[in-house]
Figure 1: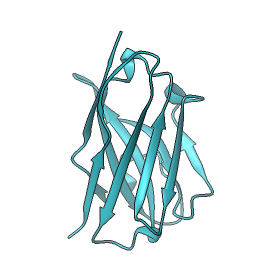
Figure 2: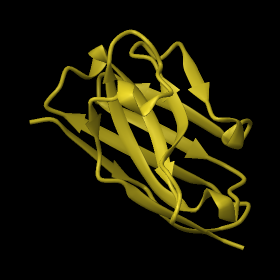
Figure 3: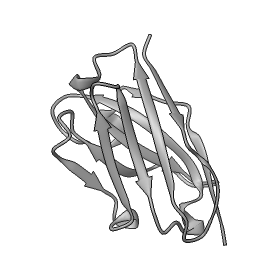
Figure 4: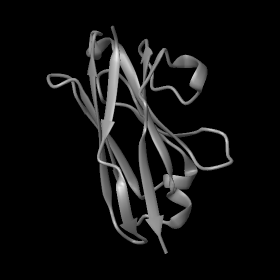
Length: 124
């Protein structure tokens, strides 16, 4: 049974930082590209960042350009999203997802497994 468990969300003031973590189990982690998506209230889920399975290629959404990094540790089956200079519009539930294959994927349909999400709330 594949499980992706996110942690690290919370309430933070605008301008602050958060580091989200996702631990994967039940799959061969190094065979999967990993991604972070988010869904704000009343909005569709959107892509944030992705990393390929070897960790040498990443993609980001324009909305988080220059304010975020993604990293992975294949030995620990973890992927992390560092978010800096947070804005109120970053408020959302953040989801970790796993996509089989070589790439770093920006489309939801590439992802086979999803976590339950972690809430990030940025106050102004």
